Every structure is written in C-alpha cells, then in structure tokens.
Length: 368
Image (cartoon, rainbow, N blue to C red; front, side, top):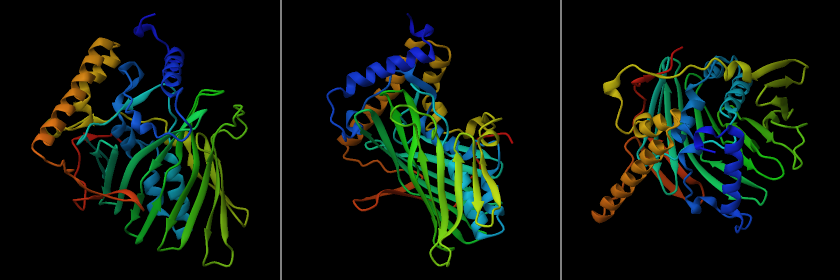
C-alpha cells in the first residue's frame, strides 16, 4: 500500500509499530528528548509545534480572555481564568505530530486587538517563548514552554514544563499557572490524553485554583475519560474551599458555589467550533523566520500527498539548520534570541522574558 492510500487508522498503527521498535529496549523513566527522533512527513500535520502553541491562545470561537477581564469580582475572574486555561488543552489526533520548530523560528499573529508573538528560543533542548498583549483590554501573557517526555512502560508521558503568566492589568492581577501533561498511551489502548494537576495562583487576591485532569483507566474504561475537577480556595478566608469545579475538558466545565449556584466556565462546543483560518494581510511584513514560510514547501507536499516532495523539503530545512549551527561553532558564536531573554536555573528550569513591552500588530490576522 502506498503512503497516499494510508488511512488515519493505518497511520496510527504504523506509528505504534515504529514507537515500539524505538522504545523496546528502554527502561521506564528514560528521557526521550535524548533520542532526537524525527517523524517522517507522513506522520506530520502541516504546521509547526510553534503554530499549535500559538493557536491555543488566538484560535477560539469564544472570547475567553474577555471573560477573564470582565469578571466583577476576584473569584469570578479566577473562575474565568480556569475556564480559559482549560480552553488551551485541545483534542489531538493520534498518530499525527506537528513539525519540530527550528532555532529562531517565529510565529506572529493578531486576532482583533490581541497580538501574539512566539519564538523558538532554544533547539537542544527545545524551548519556545510566547508574548501576547492586548492594549485595548490591557491584558498581557508571557509563557515559557518546553517538553520533558518520559517513557513509562505502557505510555509516554510528556510534561509541559515552564511558567505561564496571565496579567489582567486593569485589575492589577497576575495569574501564574502550569499545564497538564500529555500522555501518549499505546498499551492496552491507543490514545492521547491530558493528565495531571494544574495550579493557578493569584498572589494579589490570595486566591488559588487546583484542578486535576483524569484520563482513561489502564483498561481503557471511559467513565472518567477527560474529566476535570478541583476547587478554588483562599487561605485567608474562614471557609477554605469557595467553590468546586467539575466537568470534562472536551465538553463543559462548571463552577459550583457553596450556596448552590452554578456557572458554566467552559463550553468546548463554543470554544473550539467555528474556528477561522488566519490570513496574510501584509505579505511583505511576513518574516523569513515565520513558521508558514519555514515549512511552506513541506506543508504543500503533505497537503498534496506528494510525500517525496515533503520529505525532500523537510530534509532541506533540517540540513540548513545543521549548516548554520556548524558556522556558528566555527566562529565561536552563541545564538541569541531576537525577541526574548532566555535564562536557566536548576531550581526553576528555563525562563523567558520579552524584550519589548508590547507586541505589535501582525501581518497574519485571524478574522473575527
């Protein structure tokens, strides 16, 4: 059977066979970043991981960020931030992966007055930085994002490391949060799922939300599939738990107060439906480092199912990166990110801070 005729199910099965071949001699806990595995084009979706990372911020059928800013009380705003955080965990296609971004790759997109800029600030290890600002609504986001995949015997668990900050400047509030882990399960069932605990904390209001993502059981039972539950509490209040959070991240999540009232803080149907494709409004403003330009020929090959073209174009991108790395090494130069400052410590890991205070409007726009 040719690659052109390969179905999604067959692609997933082929991926599983490749994965089992790679990891059969590994011990649980092995850091898979050390393998430096490169998926062939027929396992890629036609976009970069940097684009997928940015889409979780600017691709939404509902204005989740606006709800965060519009909350009438600190508790309402934190509930809205929890809903927005859940909206960044999107369904994934088993057996399909985005491209690994090249060093210095950027992704710059605007949606309304929200301007989003991402940069791949490190390649080994892979670290991505995000800065987004909305001067009209006085909102700022700063994220540092890097992966730590570990082999667990029957699955691969990828911890989404790095700090995420959402600043509601009109209220003088900064929300610091982490992200759930992504689990690639291949025994006894094949599935991608979000799992783990997320903590969202606002120092200014002394409020904290803790939520848990639960995936399938080992035997694949779906009773708790994609469940999200947790609570919001304040240690300074006599009543510690202020409300309970319960639902499923692919359906809806509700915040329930102690007085019996309830409010839907996340509706997947409204958030991830009717999404619109970004369009280029200023071709001359698109940088050579933009994800769509870097991977353009590879994506064309994948979309047309011309796998030879896709493979050749992907190898050309990767070979060019190796050449640039050798040139820098020969000149004893250290690559420096253009839009972010990058730092590392054993205690806190990688951290990124934007060089500019605001993100300018982008040449690529998501229609509203």
